[in-house]
Amino acid sequence: MTASATDIILHNYPQSPVAEKVRKVLGIKGLTWHDVEIPRLPPKPLLTPLTGGYRRTPVMQIGSDIFCDSQCIIRELERRHPSPIERSDANAGLMWVTSRFTDGDLFSLAVKIVLGAAADALDEDFAKDRGLLYFGEDWAESLKQANAELPHFVSQLRAPFSWIDDTLSDGRKFLLGPQAAAIDAQIYYMVWFIRGRWSGGPSLLSEFKDLLRWEQNMLEIGHGNSTSLDAIDALVVALNSEPASESDVADNDPQGLKAGMSVSIAPDMESGEQLVEGTIRSANAESIAIDLSTEEAGNVCVHFPRTGYRVFV
Ligand SMILES: N[C@@H](CCC(=O)N[C@@H](CS)C(=O)NCC(=O)O)C(=O)O
Image 1 (cartoon, rainbow, N blue to C red):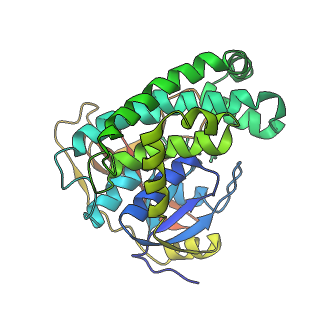
Image 2 (cartoon, rainbow, N blue to C red):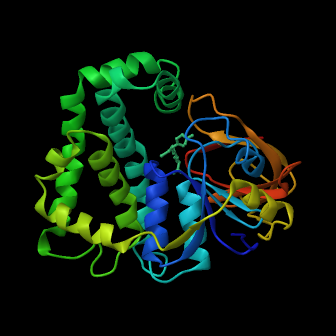
C-alpha cells in the first residue's frame, strides 16, 4: 500500500489513549486514513525525522505537513473536513476550553490510576520513560504515591464521570445531542483508557448507566476506514512532497514571533523531551508551524499547538 501527498497518515500504536481520541474523530467524520504503527518507546527512528524530534503519540502527516499533538490534529481534520463535528457549531470554543481540563487534570488522574495501580508490575524501561514523561524527575516517588493513594485518585475521577453521566441522563445519544462531536472524543478516550488498562475500571464505570449507554454509542462509531502503511513509505511521501501550509504570522504575537525567526519548541513541562528546532512559517493564538529539514524526510513543516507548548525564541 502506498499513500499520496494529500492522504491522512496517522503515526500511532493501538494502546495509546490519546491516539484513540484522534481515531474516534476520524470515525465521527467517516474519514479514510493510513495507519503507521510506531514503537511505544523511543527511539523512534522512522518518526522523529518527520517531527524534528517530537516523540509523543499520535502524530498526523499529510504530505510534508506534520501535526503534533491531538489538538493540532483535530483542528486540521476539522479545517479540511468540516462536517460533521465541531467548528460549524458555537460550542467549538468551549470544547477547546474544556479540553484543557480533560487533557490536563483528568488525563493526569487517569495516568496516575493506571500506572499507580500497576506500579509493581511495570516493565522497567516503560516505567522510567512514562514516569519521566508524566511525573517529571521525581517520578519514582510519584508512582509510589499514586499506588498508595489510589482510592483518593479514583474519587477525583469519579466526580467528573458522574457529571458526564448527569449530562446524558435526559437520554441524549451524544454529549451535545444526536450527533457525536469533538467533545465526545475528548472525553471518550479517558473512559476507554480507564476501562481497558485498569482492573478496577469496569467496576467504576458500571455505576454510571447513561455513561455506559453513551460509551456503547461511541464504540459503534468505529475509526473510519484505515489501511496499514509501512513507516518507510510514510517517509517517502514526505521526501517526495513539499509543505503546503500557508505562511502567516499575526502582528500582535505576545512573544513577538515573526515569519522566518529561528525558534525551538517542546511540551511545557519538565519531561526531558527534545527541543524541535526550525524557522517560523506561521503562528497565531492557537498554533505555530515551523519549517525544518532532515535527511530522511526532506523539507517538512511541523505544527504544534500554543497551549501546553513553550516556544523558545
Ligand atoms: N498533549 C499530547 C499528549 C500525547 C501523549 O502524551 N501521548 C502519550 C501516548 S497516549 C505518549 O506520547 N506516550 C509516550 C510515547 O508514545 O512515546 C496530545 O494531545 O497529543
